[in-house]
Structures are given as C-alpha cells and as structure tokens.
Amino acid sequence: MPEPQQISTAKRWLLRARAGLREASWTLGAAVFVVVALMAARRIGLVEGALAAFLVVLAALLAPRRRAPLADDPKSQAETLSTQLDAILSGLPDPVLVLDRRGAITGFNAHARAALGEIRIGEPVSFSLRIPEVLEAVRGAGVSGAPQTVLYVERVPVERWREAHVAATRLVEGEPKAIVISLRDLTEQRRSERMRGDFVANASHELRTPLASLLGFIETLQGPARNDPAAREKFLEIMRAQANRMSRLIDDLLSLSRIELKAHVRPRDVVDLASLVRGVADALAPLARERGVELDLSAARAEVHVRGDRDELIRVAENLIENAIKYGQSGKRVEVGVEDAADGPRLVVRDFGPGVAPEHLPRLTERFYRVDVAESRDKGGTGLGLALVKHILQRHGGRLTIESAAGAGATFTAVLRRANVAKPDPKLLKRAS
Ligand SMILES: Nc1ncnc2c1ncn2[C@@H]1O[C@H](COP(=O)(O)OP(=O)(O)OP(=O)(O)O)[C@@H](O)[C@H]1O
Ligand SMILES: [Mg+2]
Image (cartoon, rainbow, N blue to C red):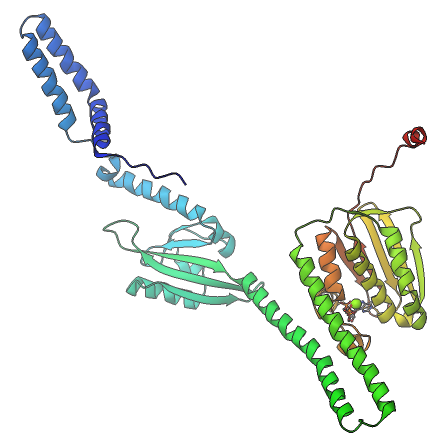
C-alpha cells in the first residue's frame, strides 16, 4: 500500500502563500502598476518603489483568507447538506428513512420506497411503516436518544423478517437531532437457518431409524435368538439391508454437498445423452422385470450431445427411471425417451401409476420430502433422489419439470444444454485415409 503523503510545514506555508497571492492577484497587479507609474513619473525612487512593492506583497500574504461560502450562508449550507444526505442515502444498500424529531419523514432512499411502497416527505412515519414496535422505538429514540433494534415479521403478502435499527443523530451542529431508521431484510437468513435446522433433524432421524433396528437385532441375536440358526440368517439379511440404507443415505448426502460445492462451475464435457440413457435403462431392466413393469425405451438412434458430467447425468437418469418403476409400478409400463427438442435435449420419463397430487408437486425436490414416507422407506428410498436431480440439473444450466395428476401417472422431464459438436468433414476424412 502506498505511504500516505505527509505535507511538511514549509510546504504548507508555500501552498498558503501561493493561494494568497492568487487570491490577491488583481490588487497586486494594480499596486505594481501604480508603483511603476510613480517611478516612471520620478515621484519616487527605486528604493521606495521596491519597498512599496514588498509591503503590498506582504499585505496580500498576511490578509485573512476568504472563507468558503458555506459558513457564511446558512441557506447554501442547508442545500449542500441535503445534497450530501441524498447522496449518502442513495449509496446505502438497505432501506433508510430520516425523520425529524416529531417523526415526520424528511428523507428516504429508493430501497425504502421499494420495501415500503409510497412514501411522502413531511408525512408521519406511521403512514409508511405500520409496525407498532418500530414506532415505539422511534418515540423512545426521540426522548432518550439511545439507539434501538427491533426484530419484526410481516405476514402479508409473504412472510418477511426484518430488523429495524432506530437511532437519533445530529446532522447539523446546533439543530435538533434527526431520527434515522434503517431496515435489514433477514428473510433469506431466517429461511436458510430453518432449512438447516430441518435438514439436520431429518438426516439424524433417517440415520437413527435403521440404527435403532440394527441395535434391536444385535440384542436379539445376542439374547433369545443366540442358538437359532434360522432366525440368525433372517435377521442378518435385514441387518444387511438396514446397513445398506444407512450407507446409501450417507453417500447421497455427500453427493449433494459435493454438487452444491461446485454449483457455480458448469460442466464442460460433451456427453451423448442417448447412449447414456440406453446404458441406465439396460442396468435397470432387471428391477423393472422384478416389479412386472415393461420398460419402453425410445432413445434417439443418433447421438444427442449435451454439455455435462457423465456420472452426474447417470444419477439423473437412474433416479427418474427408478422412481417411475418403483412408484408407478401399478401402471405396468414406463416410457423413457431422449429427444433433441428446440429448447434443448431432454430426457422424458413417463409412468402410468398413481401419479402425484398437485399439493405435493412443488415440494417433491426438497430433501427428504416423500409423499408417503413409509412406502418410500419400504422401497429403500431416502427421499434425496429428486433433490439430487434438481441440483445436478441446475449446475448443468438445465431444469426439471414434473407433470402429473393423481391417478393419471407422472411425466418427469430433464432439459439440458445442447453441445454443438462440429461434425468431421467427410472430404477431409477421405483425404486422410
Ligand atoms: N414417478 C413417481 N410417481 C409417484 N410419486 C413419485 C414419483 N417419483 C417420485 N415420487 C414421489 O416423490 C418422492 C421423492 O422422490 P425421491 O426420488 O426424491 O425420493 P425416494 O425415491 O423416496 O428416495 P431415493 O430417490 O433416495 O431412493 C417419493 O418418495 C415419492 O413419494
Ligand atoms: Mg428416488
């Protein structure tokens, strides 16, 4: 960092002298003219002339400096202050209101208007900010001068948490104090705190359930079933399933946090979506057979290039097709299609099962959200699949749409970004061979 410039006393004097001479330049010019004229008329000699010029310059240097108009003119001082106040208010990131000591609005910024709607100068603050606790703090600040912070929540039209900081401050020396209210929007912070709390509670609950079952079986195996080989085999099988569930849950949680960490980095690889989906459908064919579901694949024969991370896109296809088989089992058929649509390549997975009722649709991609928790658990689900799908698609610059009506099946569509891959020129290929 550069050193702050130090101005020496001598230099300061020099600067002041220069400013004094500049200020008195007209007077000095006139005086020099008179002295030269007197000398020319031989009314005074060279020595007297030089002395007179020296005295005039000395007087110019010692004469008191003219003050800035601000201190002399209260009107222009008030105007300057108001301009400065406007500039400060408009530069602040939060809504701010300035009141006189009676609580009438004397200034506000654009953020305040955006947060509170219509605001008029001169009106009482209670017309714009109808929060009794804040108005009480304004009265208190006017009386005691002590700053106060008030936390309040607005419920209409949407829930919004705000913190109002109310302080009395003197803007002009000798004038009564003004009251400044600054508002801070804490909605996002509150929402993420609540989500974090819910998430920890959900994750602990999901881990505790299989753990409790494992501990129960261990106790049974050490006690009553100690010498029962048939029970031992059965219980060990259940224990393996529960342990697998725990390990899947931890894997999914880790995948989610890894994807969140690189949320801002767009994948750059080029992936053929058609062959990727064919591979996933082949891998899930045994599950479909086991559940009596016909898996109908209509992936484009030609390659469909998307920008993406291969492993993450496999997870998307796996989750959507597996869900359709598991939850749409009663429809007995699942259609999987890869299309190169105008707004981007897409994977469409459609089932003919019970579908999803409209009230559940907006929440399906939340972590741990399940329409029927017991059914999902029975099917080995953790409730993280669609949350993973959503985050992966967001990172890919794509999106997930869900269309469904209760009893009419469900269609999940993952839209991705097309990768324009230059096709090799056949003439060049021929020449090369
Ligand atoms: N095709 C579908 N038809 C009906 N309901 C579905 C369908 N797909 C998902 N759901 C509902 O959405 C919920 C959330 O799905 P998600 O994939 O996130 O979790 P999961 O399948 O229960 O667990 P996981 O994917 O971790 O195995 C499911 O529990 C189910 O209730
Ligand atoms: Mg799932």
